[in-house]
Length: 230
Figure 1 (tube, rainbow, N blue to C red):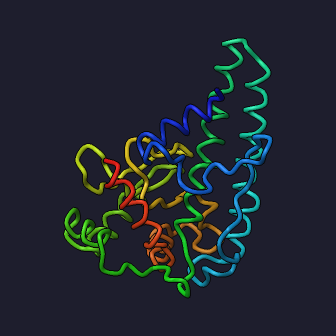
Figure 2: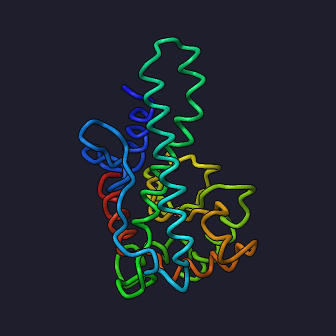
């Protein structure tokens, strides 16, 4: 069993029903077991003006592809050695690139053009839960943005479902660490490559803008699955 498979199964137990893997497309595999870059459900310019075409193209085709390449290389090297010392040396590359692949595959599904409902949180179970756990949708967004903006260096801000408390909670992870303590409902990439070309060093503007293209339908689907399996 590869290191990433172990991580993915751990994420599955924390984040999805036992019969499902990590979020759809998060570990796309070719027939021979090589990880591949998932296709987007929309064009690179479909999230403009909130996220530019250039950012989306570089973020998806270059940065995410680099995580896929790094993961494949690390897993290949891991499979070729039985020496514990060499396997331990590969752990950081497997975690970093595997987490990057998992997180970004979830992130693309997290977004949708406004023409396809991006940014619209309609009445339903997710909205009800957000209001119950944070007081209002605006209060939730404000807290999520504040917590995410406070991440030192690079990382991810998350809205997650806690299977133990059965509540929605905000969490963060450093670097490319995947969210394992909660079921990921919404993830926001706060690495500079996600916003710097457009928003420069003003994280607050990026965090305000991204809510216009958050795919709340996908978020609600994840929430309902999480609540059902808790």
